[in-house]
Length: 223
Image: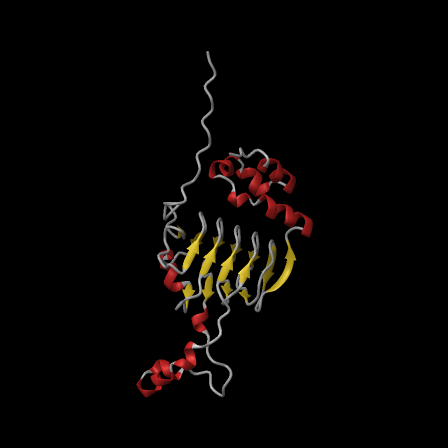
């Protein structure tokens, strides 16, 4: 009898809101977010037993614009991960930090005192970043690919690729790979592979070596 070719592995669907229907606490963020100031890559998810679909209002705070929140692909956000945006800033160059103009009355005539505050720019998260429970990211922070943010960390400064940070304020604990291997991983950029190729190499991506990843990358058919 002729051999029947094996069916190719089936990729997961990046467009569904709840990738695990039996666990509604997990949502994919890309099909959830509506704000034009928030950009999220495929398969990045948020896990929260208390209405994860409220992510935009409960976890992205003081987002009055125009700064953007950019989250890459394949990021895992633990319960309570929050992004503080530039709208949280108060003046600190005078005797009081109180935002008088927001209270109304004639105080509103001085609104320029809170609209000309310096901003730190967009908050940008790379691909394949894991946020532990209750992590907080301050305005304008840039977090590199493959980083790990410890539970309860308050990230006030940039995090390098494949860095592990923890504490308040968060400090670099170590990097997951040495500088040479980090460069190789960034060159491989598995998160940009075709979805079918990722599907065929899930075990390598999760538990392989850098050599294994490079070998898998070399198998991608080029147009």
